[in-house]
Image (cartoon, rainbow, N blue to C red; front, top):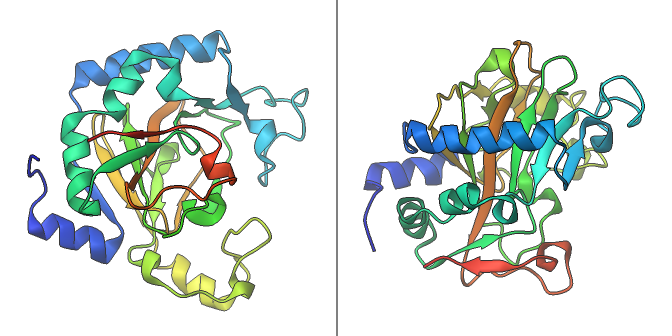
Length: 254
């Protein structure tokens, strides 16, 4: 198995809960995925999630409301096109994940497995949350892999992280019914102050722990922001049988 990550990078991931890999994907591969994304958004190729589906604060109230049929994500990216599947199973990516998991790597097709498309005007903000909130695995040891197909920053709704928050032990009252951090709780306000923006350029990849709190603002730019997102786990940490996490196939990648 190829060794891609240094011991310092692995330690940074363990401590901070995320790791940025600059320029990891060539521009031409990003352009191929972006071309598919634009075509499928324009043609509304199913399955899609619309802004009206999420129920977040500020989202359109229904599909027929203004902006209700704004695509939030193209689902089933693995099944959607060969370009996405080639990236998700990229040997260099799998090698890096193998180093972090210390075992063979599986991709879960039940979660993420999508292209996030944050539009101007109707692309709603996402509050502080962690991916494990609706995943069912024996151990909270999954890694989300986020690929930027273009620039991502605070202006167009780029990612924000609370470094080290995957190691926190939280009290139930800190979370709302959707498992977002409640902004009115004093302990959470202190956490929010630790949040940082992680600007990305085309081809940058960020790996982050399933227990890491992250958020994203609105897209205040004039362009759609597109990001490919997949989730992975170690072979010894399969989804809980009968759960939503076991609803779709898991694929062993090495």
